[in-house]
Length: 427
Ligand code: IMP
Image (cartoon, rainbow, N blue to C red; front, top):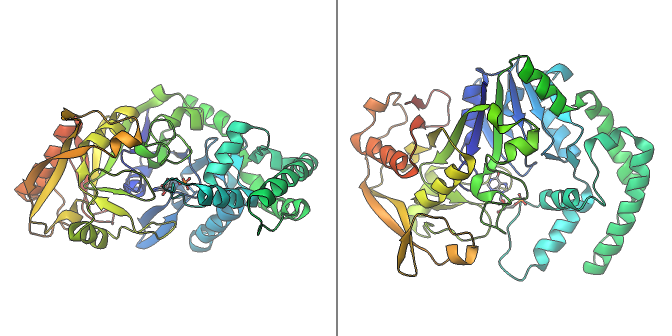
């Protein structure tokens, strides 16, 4: 049992990419199991910065096999553009070291059009999606009627007839909802996707069987989560979530690998909290401290460039994420961003209807009503990005990390004090 999983415990963007990259060399296979090109991972490797969205971080390393498993939704155009970017900088990617699930679902242009109509039609606060057709593709998967999987691309006659049926339906539906809508041409989409298929074909396979064989052969697996536990479709802050199982719960369903294979589940948290898009955020800082964190932490979306909402560390929210995902230890990221602040607050409980609780509300209306109960801690003035040992951290920084560990009832194994690989403290 030598599988490791890296899972975000907040609302995504916890800097999981850096940890995945750090751990990759200790593994044989890196598996992405949910989400799509809504995700953004920034990885610094060989002195260069790579922005990955759909491809697992393992793609940057020779000798590692990367798997895009069944639970992922794939926009082939975006996928190939990202692959081309890697190939131009690092050379060809052989099919032996890159596998794409034939069971994964395919994003088509009508999914993006449908998402725009749905988001704009919402009377309540917008979900604030990335507009990549993620939710509409997963909706198709659950609905089945109009779903197309990667494996279907290998049967051109089947694909053509499916597209004719689906596109006719989508054109009717979208024209009724959005008068300015320009109808899609099924033959044009078919021709476009055939060219993608030619390029994807060498990588397409039954990744579930591949992973089962790999486990039998004692290969070491690393599961790379996208987004975070609080964006999980079932367990997150619904409806302000993504459409996949983005907590640890998604590993089993998204890869076909049983959860008990995982011997080390690493929960990733930022030293503060961010979120992109709509929805309640109890510890949000709409003030100069929030702006300071945004500026110092470069808190702007990797995929959409949107400014991220910033706030204090929320142990009720992250603790809930940790319990859903079932973590063994923590990695605390971006601790250096908090350097220089006079004092820091950590939310240790919520107060609602005069009651104090550490349970995370199941309804967003209730989450919107909570009052965070803060523990105030002294800040540290000095730079910490050069520090490599826990003992060398300022006492107040150690106290801050210990507080997170205490409130999340876990131990901190990794502290990140900068974007580079070396800017890491192993606890
Ligand atoms: P969707 O995944 O594009 O459907 O967007 C749904 C919600 O998830 C929105 O609030 C997005 O901002 C958020 N989201 C999706 N992907 C990410 C991510 O990688 N990091 C942070 N938030 C994300």
